[in-house]
Amino acid sequence: MKNSTPMVKAANIHKFFGRKNHVLKGIDLEVSKGETVVILGASGSGKSTLLRCINFLEEPTAGTVEVDNIVIQAGEKHRDRDKKILELRKRTGMCFQAFNLFPHMTALENVIEGPITVLGQKKREAVQYAEELLEWVGLTEKRDEYPSCLSGGQQQRVAIARSLAMKPTVMLFDEPTSALDPELVGEVVEVMERLAKEGMTIIAVTHELHFARDVADRVMIMDQGTWVEEGTPEKIFNNPDEMRTRQFLAHIL
Image (cartoon, rainbow, N blue to C red; front, side, top):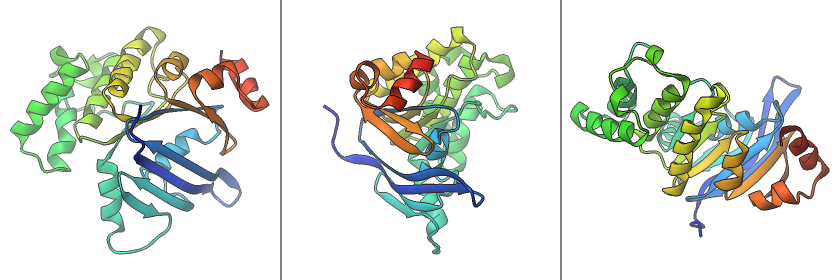
């Protein structure tokens, strides 16, 4: 049984791009410590925008975000706000569709950059932990390779190691396998599965349905900026209540 302590809470999140493009329409989300939540939905439904609002890569138009007891209100203005956002981001690792590695840095250098520059770790300490993480994602022998010499799957595993090097309490995955060739998807999903089994709190936007079926504690369906339905993987995939859920699943199953 998962810990019932909320690790992530988003309350009444709205996001407008311009005046008319209302992408998120009052989204509420609560994720317990150690829980794995998969968000599914058609392209353009607001899934990625929600993840970016959780760590304030996008400023929500309205609402409140809480991550690991750090609470930030959309639009609030005070002296310490930037510091609070930085603290929230330290607790929130994120992996993107594009791997976003620094091309002029080796795998090891990519992993140690954040701990040294943001957390102020000594290089020796950062390197030691980075080597452990690269071993954990199966890339010890690639530590001195540059991203251009790595496959897409290897680059994404370095990106995961880089996020973990900041010792986050939550991991956000924004379609981390969508840019990969099909034969490389499994090696990234395997790392995500191991993270979940080890108790990391995970929110994943992904169309890797076997990950959603086998690993997720909850699956949530989003459409046009609102929740359509949520439930256990068994419930969502085998006996959904909503027609929109059934229509969406019919397109991807």
